[in-house]
Image 1 (tube, protein in one colour):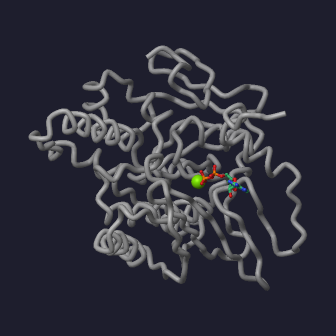
Image 2 (cartoon, protein in one colour):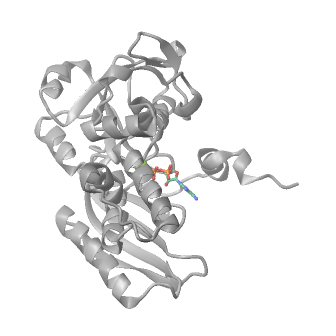
Length: 341
Ligand code: ADP
Ligand code: MG
């Protein structure tokens, strides 16, 4: 018998492969199923996460400068460490190379890696290098530290907790659509150089995301301990459903509270897309989605980098998006067909 991977999907596949995963070491505090694992080493807690980027799947070298790619490869890994409310300290970088890549190109790539390491105070401590027949593959492991038991998982949200998200959503997806559009134009007509000056924000969001270290530090300084947290790599609806599934809750998400940048609104209109759909299903925003107790409402609503977008409910109340017109739609991981635009 042969089962196709596509019949399970990414998350189904991970669940399937790790369904019998048992941990034997007392120091394994948190295993598969969160943004990072947590390991206790004689009272110090260490957070570990790993992510792979594959040419043609995650990036296109036609419009991705290698310096940006290096920076982003580190940034997206650190995002998972911050999503545990931990502080990243070390990374390892493994690469598989085709002979298409020159030494000069790799130097640029490492400039980006080192720039991110410097920006976020992380040491590059190792990795692996090998060859590839199908383009560039980058695998980065990030390690961080957290004060004992001060890490935040996906599973601690309670009914009535406020749902919060940092920054704004949907921009990276539109930035990608824009780059794809310009690539097509360029391939058909190599004389035309794209002018993306007007959309610097959108393009910046896809090429050079920044993990939300600032928000994690602010939460710590203000003694606000989220009850659950995840980073937004796949789109708001998918990430919120992860929090609900892991925490055994329902949720109400208010469409009119989902934050979007002006450029995102304008470009969504140009592409004939709904801004909400871009936020729900777009992905690659690398913002943080988290829940907090209602007692923190006043403090958090004064903080410019966070929006309160809904609240958790009892599981049997379901998971819903309340639209601007007051309609109530079940939230699905594929926001595209979930509701009328
Ligand atoms: P994220 O989007 O935060 O990077 P993923 O959806 O990639 O998280 O992974 C979810 C969880 O599954 C994580 O705990 C990750 O470590 C684990 N995981 C992913 N792939 C595998 C695998 N091949 N084997 C074991 N665990 C995996
Ligand atoms: Mg994550």
